[in-house]
Length: 286
Image 1: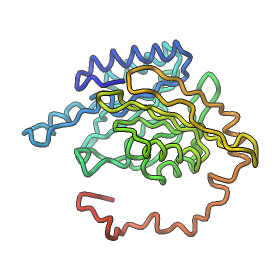
Image 2: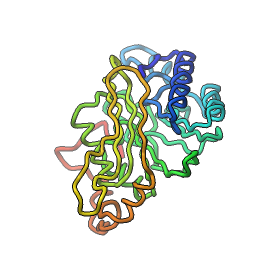
Image 3: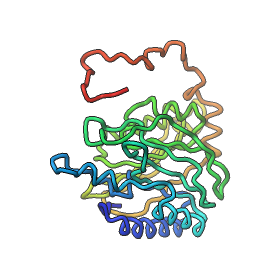
């Protein structure tokens, strides 16, 4: 979808319509692009009061905007991963709430790798990568999230895999070129998880929402296969990505990636706080 800017009523109506279309096509879960409640719009740093006005658009989890989609999930019997600018102590958060088909919020994740080099310095970063069991008509699936810039850090997908994620959902809002898409494909392969990413359509971004399967080798020691499930075009539309969870689970039990042969004792530098040149950035925090 393309966003509706800060017109929350328009965002609600459009999101409702697309969810209904998705369910009519057989979807068990609908995934929104990043920060849908404000259409991924930001304040103008040059405009006096712009930051305060933008932050005032943050909503709490009991806001009517979210309540509408909780009720819609019950009506459609479909899970909805709804994104929004979340009200928070101090600076707001870039969040996604996973609403199950019973209308319950089973998990809320806030973007951990905020783009501090940009206007996302006005946000509070998330502090963890939770995983939850989502009850669907097809049975439970363990779900985790990355939001946009998160997917550019292999540690994010890895910690979700270690937490038991079978499917990683990724709301997005940027240009998806071959490098970012290739990076996303690698997250599925190296962690043996299914991944699905929803981006804003052109002209806001460039679409190309994409999903990859975890199963690169259907038969042990067999030939590789293309794990692409679907790649959208640039225009608005509803696309379905179908994951065979039984096949993914069997693959995770037999293959060598994931957590089977890791050497955690060697990875201490990954959690070190020190930053050395050429990676020092004055606007970065830990």
